[in-house]
Image 1: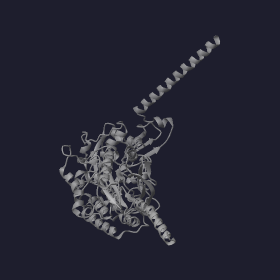
Image 2 (image 1 turned 60 degrees about the horizontal axis):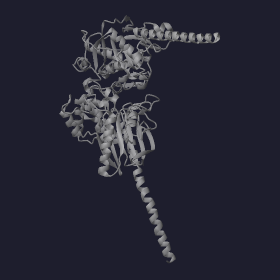
Image 3 (image 1 turned 90 degrees about the vertical axis):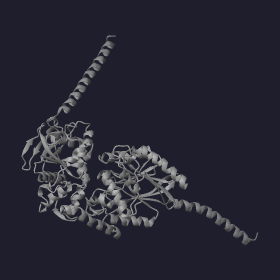
Image 4 (image 1 turned 90 degrees about the horizontal axis):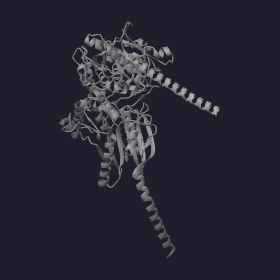
Length: 636
């Protein structure tokens, strides 16, 4: 063979070998491009909000869209998903059942799927049905909804509603969907957690065990994908269950179910700076209210995936608005003013008062037992509003840490700010109820605040009309050592066990009393009653919603807004600092440990004393036995 022919042949062989090496690498690189963009707990926060610390802002859909576009420019095949609670948290939620603003916004932003969170049921089954139908009727693009284990009752079950199932089918709510992007197939399915179910007491839905249902869905969906497309999918669970301290329900879900590659963990408003890895599953969370866009990049690892990179991109004032999304938000804002706020005589950005004081953030409200000046405003506002609406004296008004959804900013406080802070629910929630309780049960409520908070921080209570203190070193369920009624002029009155007291609280808090009692193991019972002392079933609390003069239900946010509006432009200086209505302290002083002790403390003390006496007798018996043995040895 001539030299030139040998050279050509050698070149051909080299090219062939290189092509064999390159082609598999190219295929691997294409399949290697797995990018998941994610959010959760957006809570109708279409607009940016003021940062609780350090100035600046966070969130806002127009800014979020800008970052989504930047990420998709780098990886056009990235998928965008959400972990539920997309509704309920700002004035935009008022159009939830009629306009489905949240889903239409997510459709415009290109979400590939979302799931239901507990707050999607705040308007009950009827509101959910109306919202789904409104989304379809709008003709706008909307994201698929996946939810496998939290569904309406089927025919033959209590609560069955054929029209709700029609709405599900019309919208296309499914257990899971299979999505293809850039040659990669994804199984996206939704799971609803135990605590989320507890937080939706009136949803009317049927709850199935998350792990059992997830295992079933993974098996079915993976088999379908492999059968139809000949490829093993990336399995992504959109879970409204949550994580806490790196553990929690989604940790347990990943531990119990094989084959889930990624869990987008919503519900607990968690920020995971690094994914939690459990049983081959990556658990991710990006915080609430659109504070961040989560960016998870993966590569194939057999039938599973391996982490390439993970980032939480802040959505703040340094991000420019996307013009198209900003225009949509403004349009919906005008609609809310016309359709909702006009009934109350307010506008979206109306300034109610100037606030020179720094109040607790939401996390600070529930973090430690304390008197919160923010919550003092809320409970005082509820008391005032109900007294004006009914003409009846209110003894005590109560709010809870778990219903506070935002703080009041320093500077101008607008109607929108107030609504964001007190937006939990609308439907039968977010409304004030007026009931009666016995003095004994009122004391139990105060003790509930003192004893249950460490076990259930959302149960911390804040009250108007009482003054009390508790020693954190005292026996659980007997931490309160002092409690009196306190009138506006400072007059103190003893709480009598057998007397009825007029109480005001939010509907949501009233409906959650059972959970608080359960946490106290039934020791601290609180029975709502009517003015004659007849007990009221929790499901009947809707009949005790306070009406305004016009006959409308009295909303929590409106009570606060009207109270602030009455201050003539400057927030009352009484809220500059705590006023002593709730004193929390620690002391080992025996007098303070036993002051006003109840039977529970004395029973425990007797038990402890009995154990000490038993130990003394046993010790003495052992010592005597040893002495006898020594004496016997000496004698021998």
